[in-house]
Length: 438
Image (cartoon, rainbow, N blue to C red; front, side):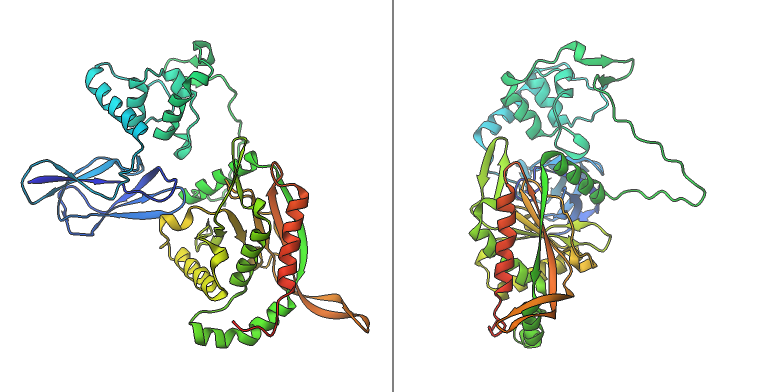
């Protein structure tokens, strides 16, 4: 009999690890081709890992809630055939950079030659076996390990964190023994701990556990506020022509295209056109470097039934017609609510749009979706009394209006660019031709 290693597959661009949320098979179970063996979760989306072979599950290598790196073996399946070696799943990322491959080889060699155990039992932090192996192989002390800022779940140190630390080790300040305070059972940082205000519970109060996604969203929002200097600009837009045009064509549109025409794809198409006129809003910050993105990939914030939020991405949005944009928006919205998005469909956004008006809000001040530098909030469309200018003079009329709010990172986007962006967006929408076809 041969042994097949089931590995954690590549989960999408920039995703290096995932948390095991549920094993759907137990040791001893028969596995059919394409059977889902385990469910995993990244910081954005939940996914299933299917088997590429038929056989029997003989070993599970990670427990529920364990953090696993992409490419790591998570289970072993016994399959029919000669025991000529260990087969492996081919859904992991095989294009490993040579430098990383050399480090991993040195780690493997170190495991065989180093007999002492790398003891982190005195630490309050959790370190994966891979991280401890790298630390041991590279001669990193526990004190140095404690000083590495983790990017993983609950601040855990990932493989990428420690490899980055090793690469820049010569530039790191040395950690002395005085920088940590040892107690009988644990090592504590000398920095003061955050003090939380105690909450008194009443007889009718109920404690509700925050969901995993809720915790992640909370962390991302706090990180964004601490990273970017948020500034907001607001503008009022007359969308009467768009409302009248949509009311006129929506039935024929649905009959011809098989899609409901909402306001969202109209606005998304206009935003893509606006970004083309102001490309310096389509950027990211990497340290003291500005990266101007070549593609316009629009994130579309979508509310989930449980109250959480997810942001699927419309890739190359500036290349889509209104019909193409409508199909993309409707498809991503429906699959978001059904939790059927693929990992790649929530990665790579360069600018984000959120529709606070769908809940009746007239405006909002959204938090930037890192590492982007701006986000647009669409307010509710309302009938408003307005001054209408005509060749015969001004009069008061009823117009359909909305307020748009633009949050941007003032480190790289000044008020002129932030304001000109939404002014251009306003001009595109207010110039809408009510007689155009779709």
